[in-house]
Image (cartoon, rainbow, N blue to C red; front, side, top):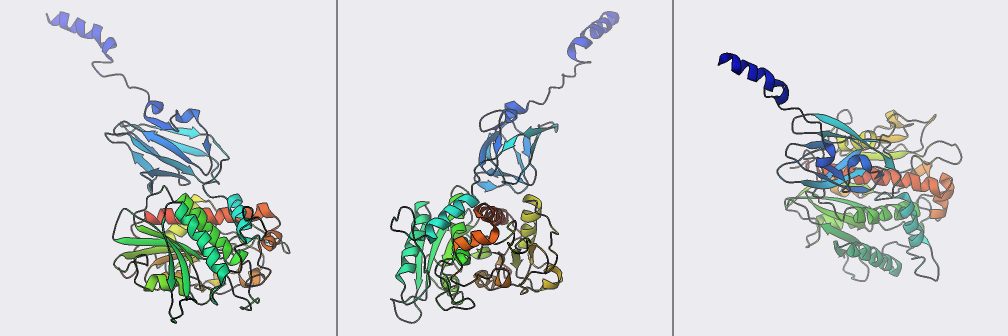
Length: 464
């Protein structure tokens, strides 16, 4: 009997996979992971666009490189890794316009991995320099056909100014049309209702949590006639129609995203008169003012956009400077705020900018406290105390801030002058395409900063 049993074991062993062990299956990526409802090896990703993905099979996961973003339930996944549970996970993949290759690692529930190389091609990014230019041209052009040009110029506060009121109504309609809860905030401090101190556009988006708030904004007013240092302007293309239009594009890009905190997207007035618009929002009590019972975590500011890297100065061929400052910077020798890590990561980790790019010589503006180190730095991206715009309002309340700014003062002579026009911006950088490139980069930087900061729990109000 013993002999028969042994013979049976030897005969059955080759058939059962070496004494009962099951045969190891190959990794089947296609059955668990789909992009745009197709096998990942069969699709082409379009740069700068959202693509749908699904992942199923408990324990299966995907992970991506830093410049390929994953979203689940409309929220950025900061770890760049998604794991399936009992139910199928559905989400989005987003590449930046600057991605050159996409490698997605699929790992099955046994810990085995396979890298899927997904081809990429040019797409239509969710924010583009081309669309920015089209909106800039419409807003700043004056003609008899209102379908071709808006003519929203002469936007200075006071007097009262019907041109400002007309432009504010146009901007309000843009946010309302996208579905935001949008308000015009008027504050009258001197008792004359026909001449408001400030008139702001505030668009609100509810977050998942009801105990925190964050925001982004730009001032839509321009320097009044005779204002320093250039005598005032009527178009204010660079300061700050450019930043105003970026907020219009961000509002559309954020429509389907879900943020952790309640979020305001704002267009301020009276920045040129001393930040009165943003101060009115932050320090007054109204239903759509900044709520004082919620933690204000961070704020990102857009002011004077487009005259920056990769655009070059016509006279010297040097790059225009690119400024992005986080704050507050209480101690110049150490990092003070967590949002500085986001600023650095977005520019040099996600967008792959050259960290130490410099010019021979020095830039003309030297207002920040790190100027001795950065006077010739093209990407002037660091923590700093620099003020002069609406981020100061929120920094004073303990918020961590980022301030985006292109060339200013000596590096762009049209600042606050009648020559601050879209045509002049194009001429200074050597063409419309060059201007669009520089705007597209800074818009992607600011947009990604907001998305990443929203998912960075260490970014807290400094008074919290």
